[in-house]
Amino acid sequence: MVKRILLTLTVAMSLQASADDNGSISPDMLSGFKASYAKDAANKARHNALNAAAIDKLAFNEAVRNKFDDNFTHKVETKGITDQKSSGRCWLFTGLNVLRSQAMAQHNLPKLTFSQNYNFFFDQLEKANLFLQGVIDTANKPMENRQVEWLFQNPISDGGTFCGVVDMVSKYGLVPSEVMAETEISNNTSQFRRILATRLREDGLRLRQAKANGAGANELQDIKTRQLAEVYKLLALALGEPPTEFEWSRKDKDGKIIETKTYTPVSFYQELLGNDLKNDYILLMNDPSREYWKVYSIDYDRHSYDGADWTYLNVPMADLKECAINSIKDNTAMYFSCDVGKYLDRDRGTLDVENYDYDSLFDTKLGMDKAERISSWASASSHAMTLSGVDLDGKGKPKKWLIENSWGKTGHDGYLIATDGWMDEYLFRLVVDKKYVSPKILKAMKQDPVKLPSWDHLFSAEE
Image 1 (spheres, rainbow, N blue to C red):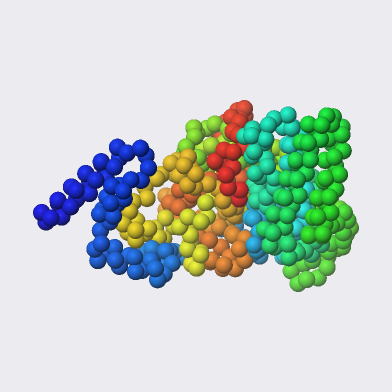
Image 2: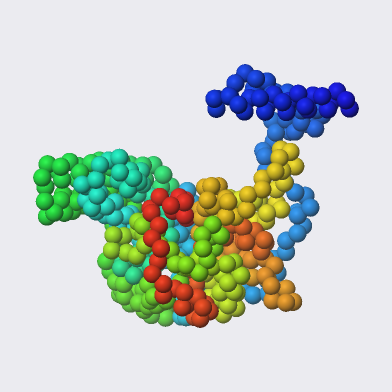
């Protein structure tokens, strides 16, 4: 015992002494680290285990294995699991899944899926224009300007938010999936995205060079138009060219055709849904790192140049959950986003902060709260899904939530089940119909938003 105390004191003194250095790792400091690492049986066992198996396998908490059931007091009936494959289009799949469930309920349709590829085509075209016009708008600023740097770092992506659903559907409508099917590239977007990003970065430089050489506003727009025509060609080659008109047959539950009509994408949307996406919905956020009951918007956090920036009201979780419960009770699913990679058990399809015990495995303490994780870039909204069920206790408090995912039949037969505690920590955004929110929320939404820059941490990870 005396020898262990002396060793501890020696290590502590070594580490303390090294703190007075010039900020680099000194030999004394390194010696202190080495001495402080206990070469005992517990650490030897940890090291051996970590070299033989995946971290989540070792950290899995057996106590939660039988914790979940699939009983929910309130559940929105949805039909058909979708699969975004190897693409970042969860925002689009989720948004269209929400709209699909509404259309099926309104028209008693036994089966319906919308074409994600159709709306993705226009999303990419609009994002290209957003970038190129942003380059024109900032052409007088140096390349070292932070906004210019951000633009060239983020010329285009396949990720996004509900803003993109609003902008693309409102402007371009919808088509059934059989009218514009998925392609190899729409299902696997990474390589094409890199090519398109390179194309746009080069185009952006050419616009800046033209401006520096004296090009006026009209000439810059002419150059941009030619550049966008090239982008359109690339998209048509990769995704197919979007239809302007098509025939669609409405069928009953037995597959019998009820009627066949000719539609444009906009008329199809108006007939099947026709809701006002720009005004019917409210975005709520839970971000404890910022003041609650304030409205915020993020610059350039949109999908089209003429679209609206992602604007939200920051509210406590209790208020956000109340809106979600109201919606689910009325058989209306919702778009929401979260940090899905945290404590996800893919095999069982569960999200639970008790799924993995990393602290015990590594003999450390990971103790940041939600606000600290957000402000330090440790957690952000990274995936959008459809919130479709809640299990309430006898007092009306949520115990767990049902989530329709867009990863095919993985997880809990295409769904995830999240504990209420996990939602507290890792849910960020909820899009809800105005009719399910409180008068307090409606009043608070009338504030002028606090404008956040495009490089804000809430825009750091698109859904």
